[in-house]
Figure (tube, each protein chain N blue to C red):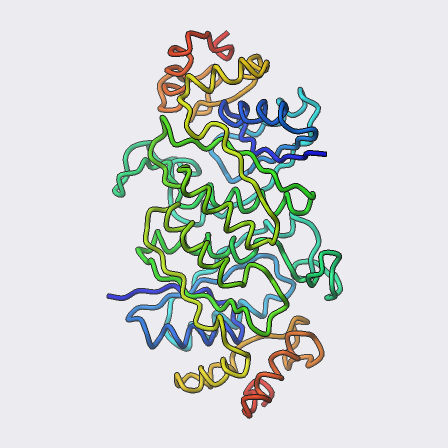
Length: 214
Length: 214
């Protein structure tokens, strides 16, 4: 039985990964992180989508990021470019942290295939989304837990438009209507924040209408 | 100015690493993890030692391990060999997790040298203590945060007896009287748990009297 664990934020990218996993694996579970994000609507979206697909969704809580200094994900900080040239939404090591915890959880569930929606393309230059980081982490986790983990990143080299096309081809396009993307936590989306704009651009280029916009 | 961050549990090994860092770096800080360990005496030892040396000690809290299943560090589980051949004190990915968070904290403090007391020798076969894991993680963290991190592991290939000799040569032997080692949280130590036995063996082989035993 091929089992997989999908890191599911409730957003467009990880939902596309979930659709991908549904096609590739016999048994799929999802894990979401309650890390003190400003908007709980993301976790609600993840629950909603898991329920729709009849999957187990586990929420793991952590308050570590709020202890590491201010950032725009867990604090009321303006989304802009920080001193280090990265957006203020950057939390150092965030994806390494999430994937490490996901792998530890997968270990306890007897799962070694882990799927994440990180992506080099169209992104804001977060260094922990790069393929080189993920491949190195895959090796680190496999060595550190003595399990042959596979970290699958089906979106790594795709544009936003291509991810829209991917979920359509996989037959799960309608799930996008249940996702959440807006950094401002708005539903309907604010259409003005960087996340909303990036999402809109992808749908426009793919010549599709976003089901979230009714 | 050469700055370093030491992961300090308050135990014998990380205290020896702290002594090592005091000799090698101009500025030293320590970070400790409050991860729901059964005994808070470890954190008290870390505070005590930092105070003695006039260093900043930061405690980061996380309750993630207790969410990942039962283990002998955060639950009242007997210390024995588990089904996977590892002791029940094994928490998958624990050191990867600690070092990732320490690196994220170091990032915020402008520090790239991190020191940890993990050790291949004399240990219970925890795969995340191995040099290969640490070297891989060093690369992962450097890629993932775009900073050239160095993870120093001065005890990696030493026996317990050699770590006793090391701290003596560094001139910090007396600090061992302030450390905590016992898995059972006892002070004076229980002398029966695996940690107490391992510690006693090291002092015996180094022909030194443990200052913790008065």
